[in-house]
Length: 71
Image 1 (cartoon, one colour):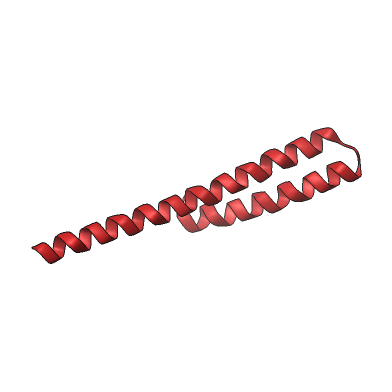
Image 2 (cartoon, rainbow, N blue to C red):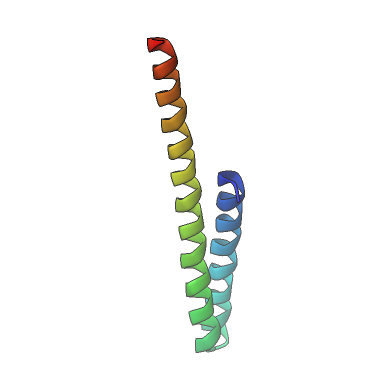
């Protein structure tokens, strides 16, 4: 899974998680509220993973460019 797809999935999971939490509060459904909280956390984690992948790609690219300049 690429960094863009991680970020997109994360945004989707975070949004759905928030909606589930609201619906759980409105219907007094603790299970739905807890499920939503978990999904929101999962979404935030996916977004962090996507950012980390981007940072690693950037670092590798910069290192590679630096090596090429020295050759």
